[in-house]
Length: 63
Image (cartoon, rainbow, N blue to C red; front, top):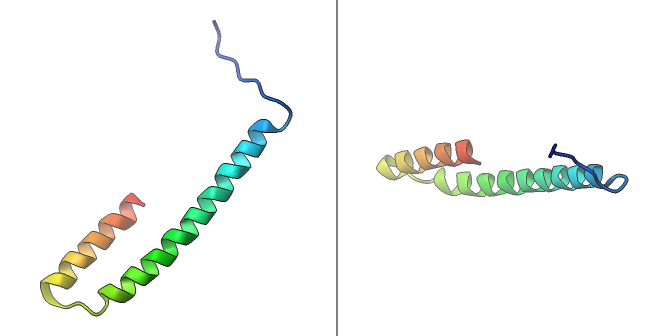
């Protein structure tokens, strides 16, 4: 049986639009969180700062 995609008029576009909107909202939330965390981390020194910066770099890659 061949794979077929069918949907009511505009359903796929509505779904794609909802995903795009959610993605944008999530990106804004992640940026706000990163700003707050960077503010906290900017006060650290020594090994704590090194560990924090490494963790933030990993977080950016995974986000």
